[in-house]
Amino acid sequence: MNRAVLLVDTDTSFVKMISALLEFNDFSVIRLDESENLANVLDNQPVSVVLADIMAGMSIEELMESIADKREISMILTGIRDLSNTERKKLLSRSIPFIKKPCMPSLVCDKIKKIVR
Image 1 (cartoon, rainbow, N blue to C red):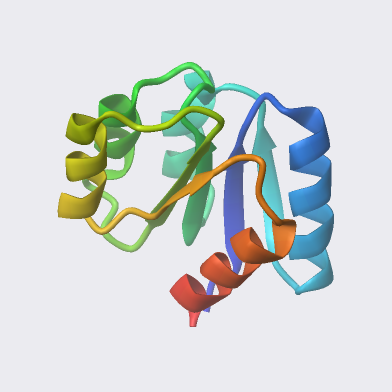
Image 2: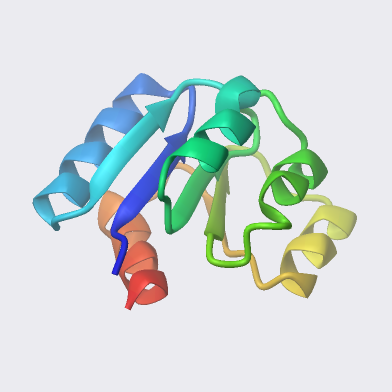
């Protein structure tokens, strides 16, 4: 099974922590500091999970749309702000987990492990 995670986040300390933990758990990590190249990476790299910060240059709708036709890819969103009711409903309707920052890196890793199993 593919154990590649695409990590889209501008927070370099979060990226380093999560990347190290995922790599320790035998995941390969592809890092993007903004969502600008997301579609290109998804078209050219085998990825099983996208872990994206909602402030990385795209709205929640744009992030969801970017993987909509790639059914084999799961998404987890993170962010430092609370979600609006509308945003929360959109995520729930597509079963996309949201993890509010700051968070324990182990929580993120555990969510990814559950998805990839």
